[in-house]
Length: 232
Image (cartoon, rainbow, N blue to C red; front, side, top):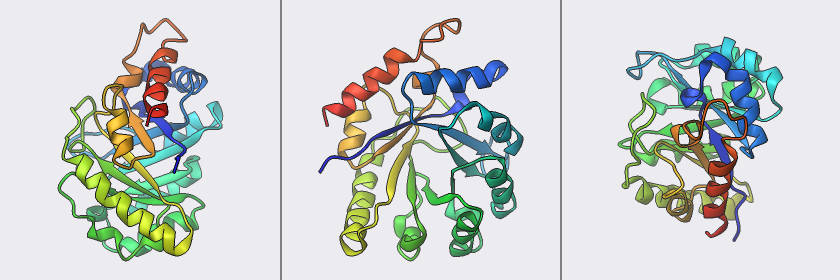
């Protein structure tokens, strides 16, 4: 059965001196979503961006803004990102005292909700909240920094999630997206898709392409990613 694939470049690897232009260019080149990696220097060893950046980008694009919260505790920031224009908000189960409540909060704020699993985080967290999930995000690197290499063990974990999601859809008729974040590039995206992913976060692979002065520098890499996905 064919799946609709989505490419979600992470602005963590973009040029922040002209972020609005970067977002416009990458969407014009064929990206589907804009991915926000939000880090707090507490849950992960890095500090990145907050709701004000999301609010600044929202008028620049109609594309889905996909906010990945690598923060602990997580609930305090959810309403702020929803108000700033996020469409999708995902979080790590370890960062919430009450996972079911946090998922409900995201929905109450008008956004789609999802759980994020680090490479060593067990999948059982999702089993009792499937009815509240719109998306599952698997980290294929340890969170905290861009530019890391894809961990091959993620392919087995992807297959495990895909099996759960397919069984759930058979029972309910409802789709849940399966996203992957970390080390996604042209030479491995097809294998990741075959393992079950349908949404792909690519940071350095996209924003590192071409010369900074070329507005069309993302065309070729996104076309190459699409070509690999078309062969799946």
